[in-house]
Image (cartoon, rainbow, N blue to C red; front, side):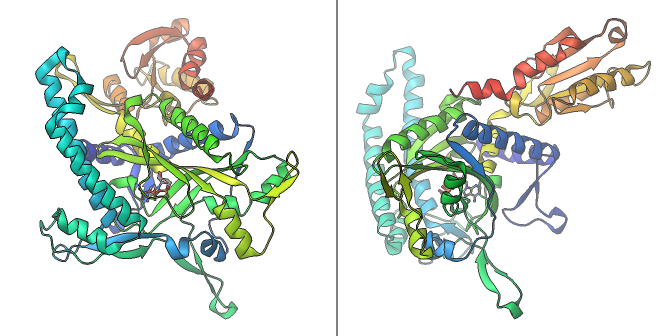
Length: 513
Ligand code: ATP
C-alpha cells in the first residue's frame, strides 16, 4: 500500500469513527474547514491539556491567558500582517488550479532528497552488514551529483524568497519544468502575492462600521497584553505567556486534510528575555519542545529540526520541528526568535510605553522574544498517522487499531458485560460508576465481545474490561490490553491503579524534567 493510500484510509477512518468530519457536510462541506466529532474532541482536548500543563505547570515562569479573537485593526498594521502576511501564488491556466509557488519549489527540493535516500536504501540492501553508510553518502557519485544540484536550487530559492523576487520564483518553476499534477502542462501564470487574512466588519454601518480581521495567529493577543500580565503577575524577565486558541488563514491551497486548514487552533508561547540573551533561550526552548513531542512515544526518528531558508522580517533565528507525515516530513511547530520587533512596533503604533523595568539591571528596555508556536490540528494529525495500524492476526483475522498514547486516548476504558442478562449489565454499570470520575469510560453491550473489542481498538481505547459470571462471585474482571490483546484476570479494586499508571498525565509530564 502506498503512503497516499494509507493517508486516504486514515481520513476515512477519522470520519467513520467520529474523529473528524468535513464541516457542514450536508451542504457538501466547506474547503479546508473541519469539525471534530465525539472522539476527535476528546483527543484534541487531551493534546491541549498536555501542552498547557507542560508549559504552565512545569515552568513556573510561564502564565496562560485567553485573549479575544477580534483585535483592534491597528494590531495587524503594527504586526506587519496587513502589509506582509502574503503567500506567493501561481495558477495553472489549463487546470485552473492554484498553487503556492514556494511549495512547488520545496517539492522539487524534496525530490532530490528522495533520490539520495533511494540510493542509500538500494546500497544498504546490496551490501548488507558490510555497508558503511557514512562513507557511501560522502563518496557515491550519484549522491554527490544530486546533492550539488539540490544545493544550487536551494541557494537560488532562498535568495528569491529573501529578495521577495516573484519573477525569479516563476523562473525557477519554468527552468525546472514543473508541471501541474492535474493538467500535466507547464502553462503557468505569473507569481502574485496573496494576503491570507480574513476581513470582516464590526459594528453596524450607522455606527460607522470598522474593518477588522480574524486573527491569523494568537501571538498578537499575547504581545498587547505583555504589560498587563507582567504587572498583575509581578513576574520578572525572563518569563513567558502562553495561550491556546483559534486562528484563521485564507490558505491558497486547501489540501492534505487537517494539515492545512482555514480555521485551526494554535498553542503559542511568547517568552520575554533580556536583549542579547535570546540565543540561549532559543536553544533552551528548542530542546524543551522537541522533548515534549518525543515523550509521546510515536518514534524519535519521526522528528527533525528544519532551519528556515527565509527569516521573517522580525526574526533573527527560526527553526521548525517537522514530523514524518504520510506525505513526508512537514512542519508541526515553529520556534522563532522574534527580537523586539512586535513589542517595539506596538509601542510605536499605540504611542504607549511598553518597556519593562529590570530591577536587577536598574534599566528599562523592550524585551526580546522567543516564540514557540504549534498547531493543535497538525499535532492531532501526526498522532493519528503514527498510531494507525492495520494488523493481520493469527487465524486469518485482521483488525484496525490506533496505538494512541494512552494518556491522550479519547476513551480510557470500555466496560463490557459478557451477556445482556443475569445481572451482568447492572454489575458493569457499577464498575463504570466507580471509574467514571477519573477516566473517560464507555459502556457497550451490543454484539459479540470480539466485535466490541474491535470497535474499541479502532478508536484507540487502551483498556477493555469484561464483566462475566465470575465477576458476580469474586469481584474480579478481565482486563484486555489494546496493543498486545493480552487479557488478565484482576480485582475490581485494582482497576483504578492499573489504568491510572498508563493514562496518567503526571507520568508523561515527568518525562519532560
Ligand atoms: P506553513 O509554512 O505550513 O504555512 P507557517 O510557517 O505559516 O506554516 P506558522 O505561522 O509558524 O506556520 O504557525 C505555527 C503553527 O501553526 C504551524 O507550525 C502549524 O502547526 C500551525 N498552522 C499554521 N497554519 C496552519 C493551517 N493553515 N492549518 C493548520 N495548522 C496551521
